[in-house]
Image (cartoon, helix red, strand yellow):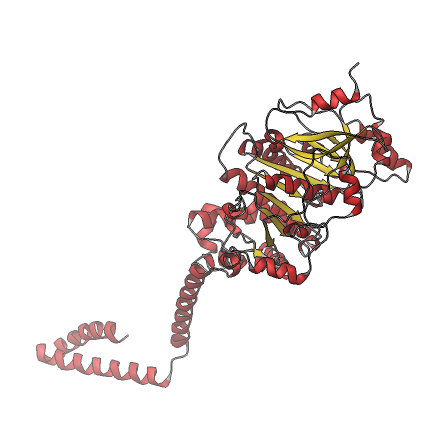
Length: 515
C-alpha cells in the first residue's frame, strides 16, 4: 500500500498553475509539510467552506481570495460582518503566524494589502450597487415581495404590458405608477389582451412595495445599474480586484440580499460568453452566510439555482458557499460543489453526532483518518480538504494546516474605510442616481391627460345640468334673434303663409347654430 506521503504528494501535484492552501497533517499534532494546492483550472467547479463559529473559516476565505488576486483572478465577496475589510491593508508579523509558517517551508509569506473595491447594497459604504426593476424581472421581484401565486401572476402581467409598450421599469415609483394605471385609467386598455388586475391585488402589491422601501430598497432600485466589467478587472500590477460587498444592513432583510444574489448570478450567466475548459477562472464569487440564500426558497427557484450553477461554470465563474454546516445547503446544490474545506463542527447532542456521521460520508474514502472524529477535533485554522484534480477527479482527503492571510486579519476602522472608498475611481460613477424617462413619467403624463379630459366632460355635464344666468340669457337672446330673423326672412319670401314656412326653416337652421 502506498504511504500517506506518497498518496498526498501524487494527489496534490499538478502540471498547470495552482494556489497554495496549507500544509498536510498526519494527525492532530504532526504536520508533514506536504503542500496542499488547488489547480486553477478546476476552481470554476464551485465549492463549500464550512465550520462552526470561531474555527477559522473567515481567515481561510481571506487567504483564498488573496491567492486568487495574486493569480489575476477577480473575486466578489459577500461580506455580512465586515470581517474581510482588512484585505485592503498589509498584515503584521506575529509569533502565532511564525509558528504556523514553520510548518510551511514552500510558502513565501510576506505582509501585503490587496486591491479592494468596497460596494454597498443598502448604503453600507462604498460604491452603491443598483439594479433596475426590469432587470430583476417578475419572478425574482415576486420572491422579494413574498407574493402568492395569484399576486405573482398579476406582477407577470405588469411586466408583460411594460415590455410590449416599451415602458422602462427603472425604480419602485415606476412599478407603483404602472399598477395604479392598469387598475384605473388603463383598466379597459388591458382587459382584452392581458386580463385585469383587481383593485384588492393592486393594494396588496403597493403595500408590499412600500414595506420594501422602508427596508431601504429605494436606494438599490434605479440607475445607474451595475456594470459587471467594473467588478471583473485587474489593477495595474495584474492583481485581481477583490470586490467586498458590505451587507451589514442587508443581513436584516435576507430576502433582499438573497434575491440580489440570485439576480447577480443570473446576470453573469446571461452576460458572460461560453469559455469551456480554461487555465483559470474568469472570476469567483464567495457567498458568506449562504444559508440565507436558501431560506424559504421555492422548489422552482431552487431548480433554477441548481441549473445556473451547472451552466455558469462554462462561463468561467466559480461560486463558493460559506456556512456553518453543509446541511445548510440543499443536496441538489451540494452535489455541484467540487471543493470542500471543512473546519471543525461542534457536537453537543445525539442529534448533532448523527448529523456529523452522515456528513462524514460525503467525503472521499480514506485509510488515514477517522473522518467523523476529525470533524470534531480540528483546531482553529485546521480543516479537512478535498478538491478536484486537473482531470476532475476528487483529490485525497487531507487534514490541513491552513496558511495565514498576508493582509490584515482584523476589520478596518471607519476612517480607514472612508479613506479607501474616497480613493476609488468608481465612487463617482455610482454615487448619483440617473433619472431617464421611464414608466412613471410616461404614464403620469397619460394619466394627467386622461384626468383633464374627464374633468372637462364632467364640467360640461354640470353646466348643462345647472346653467348659469349668463347661459340662460345668452340662450334666450339667441332664440329671440333667430325667431325675428326667421319672421323677417319669411315675410320677404312671400306673405303670411310663406312667413310661417320660412320661420320654421330659419328656426331649424339658426336653432342648430345657437342650441
